[in-house]
Length: 113
Image 1: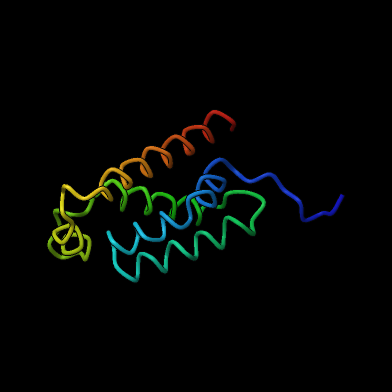
Image 2 (image 1 turned 180 degrees about the vertical axis):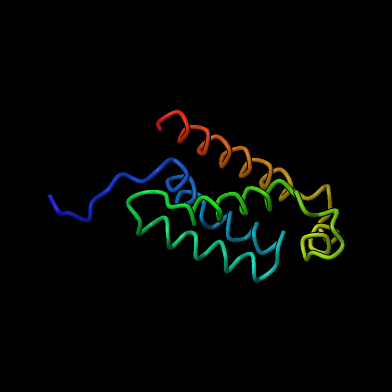
């Protein structure tokens, strides 16, 4: 068995399974910088056999973005991006589903630890 085979964490599995939707959501909610940050996280989780502290911080940031934690801060780009979203758009439901899935995956990791 090759030495580089590993079992990904539930968060890593979720991110890989939903990478296209998460990529679009990060761009929509946080602009190009958030999308670039997500792509680095995606690269990290696909090449690392275990979740690192840096990946945990990035997962926290992704969860904050999807949960709209910073949309009320006019100093942040999230406020501007959020204001441009039509509340009736189907993307809103998809973002909520992505947040629920990410939170479930992270909760599963806690149970496995």
